[in-house]
Amino acid sequence: MKVQSAVEFMLTYAWAFIIIAIFVAVVFLIVGSKNVSSYTPSSCYIEPLIPCSTAILMTNTSSSNSAFIVSFYNDLGTPIVFSGSSLNVTPSLNGNHYYGTCYPANAPMGAQIVCSAILAGYAPSIGSQLNSIFTITYKICSPACSSYNTSGYTTIISTKYASILDSVTLMTNTSTGYVVVSGVPYPSNTLVDFISGVRYNVSAVPPKGGVFSGWSETGNVFVTGSSQNTAAYATGNGILTADFK
Image (cartoon, rainbow, N blue to C red; front, side, top):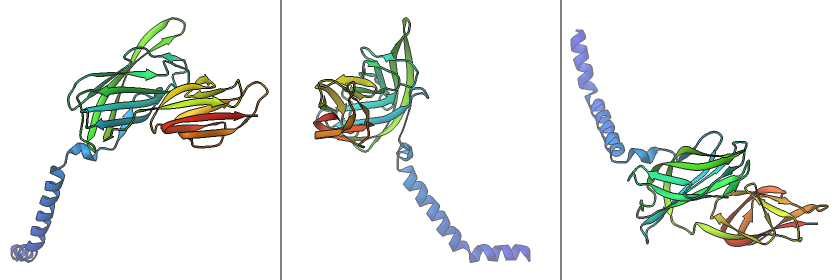
């Protein structure tokens, strides 16, 4: 009797099992047709005392090159120095080594550092995911200079190439005073390069006896707040002025 009931149950609901099986097969076909990496969220990691803030990959289809950019902070508690080819990038898809530079060359404590490299002859399709490992070489010169290497990795989506660097003129409305970008002070009428779209920490340092009164922006440079310590970014060339009174 129990065997007969089981058989009747299976015959009655056979259509349901068939539909479930077809559904599972379709799901596996859809998932299997996609690259597993397409489901991996974007990420960037270096180490806790050099925290990564931004990682960008831009493909230039007209030149068959791409640009790799990584930005991070110096939380080591001491100034660090970069020279020469301080960035070494290795995309996992081709295993080649590409070299680039980091700036500011002398990065004080808390400074935001930007490293970039051109990946010549390597142009992943726009929208594809790139997994890379990279090495950053720097020196700590206190008291004597010693070299260090630290490794990191990124998982990022390739975007359309745009101009990497924008020229930003830092100004003050007084003959003295400074604009500090990523921990580095610059006197008035200094030209610096911003990586397009990347946010930089900026501060206004008034001259002796002066008081900060606001920011003025001209062209394609923008501040995200009105306080003395804020962030700025550029989408093209422009002028950023710290106003004092």
